[in-house]
Image (tube, rainbow over all chains, first blue to last red; front, side, top):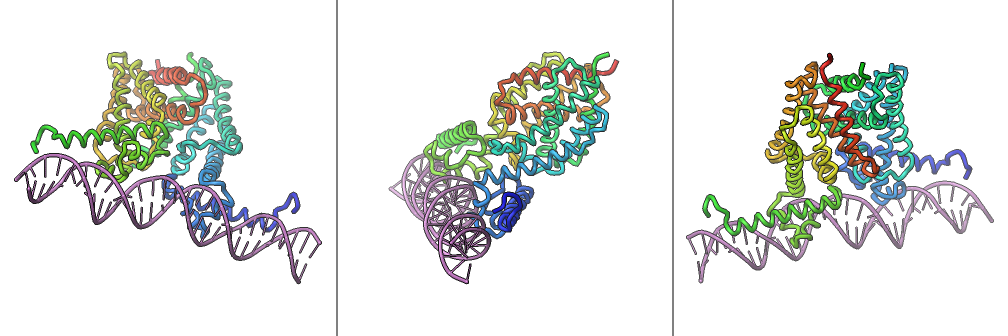
Length: 203
Length: 203
DNA sequence: ATTATAATCGAACACCGTTCGGTTGTCAAG
DNA sequence: CTTGACAACCGAACGGTGTTCGATTATAAT
């Protein structure tokens, strides 16, 4: 076996691994984390339940892999916000991207942030998490540097509050207000603007 | 059977019903909603699993009953905030009570707000929910009336934003930051104060 | 004392996650 | 080309779950 290119065997393995992940992701999107079962995943890709254990150590590892994929997707939402925007707009659009992800991928949003006891086994998660977290820290820092936010507050406290606000909005909309036909994106934007405005330095 | 007082039978039934609820609540507090099982509840009160079905139609109904109890407890936190406080202080302490409940009852907080597919079967929930919701609406309204918050914003949007902020803070602390030994209550207070201050009418 | 019915249980069913031993297919070395 | 090692996969089983049902016991009303 060469150290570099993938052998036919490895390519096949990678493909079925992908098939498992696809089926798992789809199943979670359909029925949520609650109605997710290994055996149903196996059924959908015509495998025996035991076969999956060749690719994932157990159910939690499979779920963790789906979470990792979802988190990657989530980080793409955040990273798609152009850094060329002025500091306050950038921060605002960052928050809107957060909420948009939740509204457009409710099951995965729940899965990623609402799943208890998901101690990330791979440092991959931490890495991406640190990545997206850093995006937010940067957004706040830019506003501070530009004098758009009063420097009476500690940066980390601002990060916490900003994160909590968009996370709370997302959670509430997805899990409690989704049946309302209200335009929650518009409301969120309005109140996020107010939040930014309210933190400007006093004259 | 008389229409009014409880018979001996009914008193016994009410007591075992309470025993079931107690065991269920305790089990959830110990292991969270994930590690909760009907059979374990039955074991703890020396019942057969089938016996529980005399008191609760199924697992979800039992969980819903525990949720209802937790929600009552939650509403007591909110209602314990003295309405005699000045509007802005009242609103602030309302938020702090929300967060305090989450920190002091993490498993129940998760259960109440993080449990998917819990369509409240009893109007009881809705009633209490409406009750606590009304507390928040009143808190905002009082600030508006007192001129403590700019009336450039729609009241319902303010309610949404306030709710989202404290809910987000609670969720983040309980499920992502609980291992930090940071004083999150203090941070939350600081940023909630900033939030209130930021919404004051412009001069 | 008899009877209706509430309260409870044992056993069973179907589903779940997981393990294990065995079978098949594939690939590389001889 | 044969052979042997190993990856890939499966069937069957174990212990766990929620739930149902028929039978059994305890209680209250007649």
